[in-house]
Image (cartoon, rainbow, N blue to C red; front, side, top):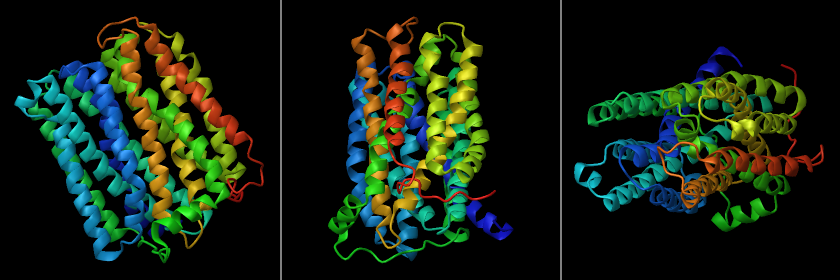
Length: 426
């Protein structure tokens, strides 16, 4: 890419940072924060996560269809309103009012409302953002570059979100002041990155909408064999990633008994992902996107499979797992969106495709929320160490989902439309 193109792609990718900063606490840290610090019940929190995510899942295809009809000033206004709602919901998740914190029922209801607001706003931004990126370039190199920059900025946001909330909670300064400052910094990052997208990034390459609207878009997706064959493996793989994300802090605190290392583990994991991201992009150019993704999935299974055997004090071994699994995550982040972008017809409803895509990702997250009431059924309680069930649900179950996804992808012939990107030289 030329220097001017790189700057414009960077302006596009920058929004990935605050989107990740908001997603990580909602999916990983909020369950621990509400159960261990605010006193919500484990099963109640799990059901709230599940129901809120189901609500979020249902709305994504409709948001995708609506976004396809937006352009120019209307698209800009849509994304600015979404950013405002996301900033307010982010503030609300960390800072429930005192009267809410005084009641377990009120606390769970507040969490549900804030989660739905955050999920809705995140979807409003993210679907438009992904659809925008899919139309940045028609060539494989441009799509890989846009995807890699977007995910790289997202990883930087994930690292920040890994360290800062954990530090606030563990230092004892997790009251209103610390999280108010953190929420304000997030709002500022969101505003700057959105401005860069709207005024500096390459323009949205709008295509003509389907005359039949949503029905026509659904019919086009149903008749797309590459898209259909990608959906189930993508969904199962997303479940395999979502379950550990929901349980990571519980595993670190109660299985490893190393809460002081939680921020370091998460930061290591996402830094390893950032390091691995350009390696997976290079591998995809050399051997093909589909094959590179398969290798990444196999690496994740090998890295994560033995985690179920870890126990108290196994800090170094878990650190190795974080590095290896983090490297493998780079393939999950960068490569599937490229596969999707390349099975979408040139004049098809791009945002509608991404609406279904994010629906599956969020359905996977909803299912992962059920891991908490499942653990409660096995008498696990946050803060109580030694639960064998925690290790199995955290590590073994995700590996089963990922293995099935890998086998499903393996059945695709080499000439299948999933293997759409030509091998190119670096």
